[in-house]
Image 1 (cartoon, rainbow, N blue to C red):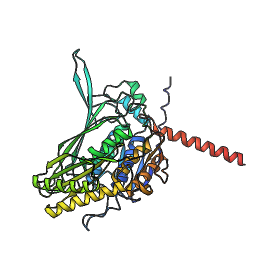
Image 2 (cartoon, rainbow, N blue to C red; image 1 turned 45 degrees about the vertical axis):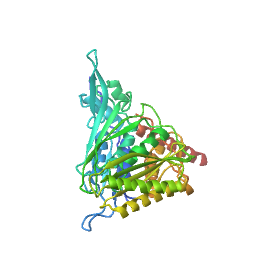
Image 3 (tube, rainbow, N blue to C red; image 1 turned 180 degrees about the horizontal axis):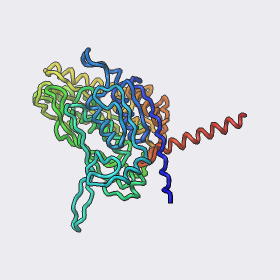
Length: 458
């Protein structure tokens, strides 16, 4: 009996070309594009990466991949089993093609599941088990780690991989063949632990304090993602003597087949509490800065409660950090901060206090529900949610360059549109779905509709 013919492999979709010089033209475009590519399996080809970024020295080329970008891209490539090109430090181009669903099924049937976790993402996850009384074992969590040798931003790496972590529940080791055929995200949600080594307080990047006091509460309480907790293992600084730290994040992915519901950031409410975090090299500097901040906040908000969640010794005179977060009666949080990277003195302390309180007041006067740093980080969740999500950014629906860049990337990959008010009809991404198959079906419907209309006209 003649052997049955082998099925033809699926044709590989062409990568979507993205010009890295578009709008902000920095690392954010790269991070979001690769994150969405890994999540949806849509292949991309980015050129002129970070070309709008000036080199530190005239002899160096502009832009290109830095170590922190590479760390995030490499993790996402392993997690999604992506084929890549140009994945090296300084590269101005990147090709990223995640494994398609059909390819995933064939590969998982060939490979033996082992203690590292079989199937998709096996290269990044380690399963942790606990022994129970009857002699069996129970899966406690899945762990992964990203290491930088320099204090590159921990928080920007988190920003790049968080959508994938939340919307792509990894299958546990030992999953049945039926689970493998169904694809990723088909098992129950497993607690995830991520440890990132790098910088916690880095120039031109969100700090771990901002992530912990603004981003995470807003995502959990207002967007509706599962709880996320963070713990600083060791601080990492770009100022003073460069120092590599580490942060542990614990979270759970959205359940299988779940879609994120639409959300609406409206009606900010009144400012009821100010959270002030101060990191300085000695108690005298911290006390002086504390006094200056209290005076300035009470001058503008005499009835507000002021709390100090963090007062910490940086043990280095060139390390000074101040974050002020305004919390409102309707649960919104807006923050402004300053990382001072030179030796501080009395006049510099006053400068820092004046700068941060003034910038925060400008944010509050704008009247929006988010600050300018939070604004662009919500775009990916608007794009992935089901329904029309809206974020009130204040007067004239002000959108930062980073926000417009994030919207552009989401529009290119997911085929949706943001209106002039920042409202978006999301794609309704379902955890575990074959997004490529959905896009193919949508294209076939569009093609048949166009053909029908052409025949009617004829």
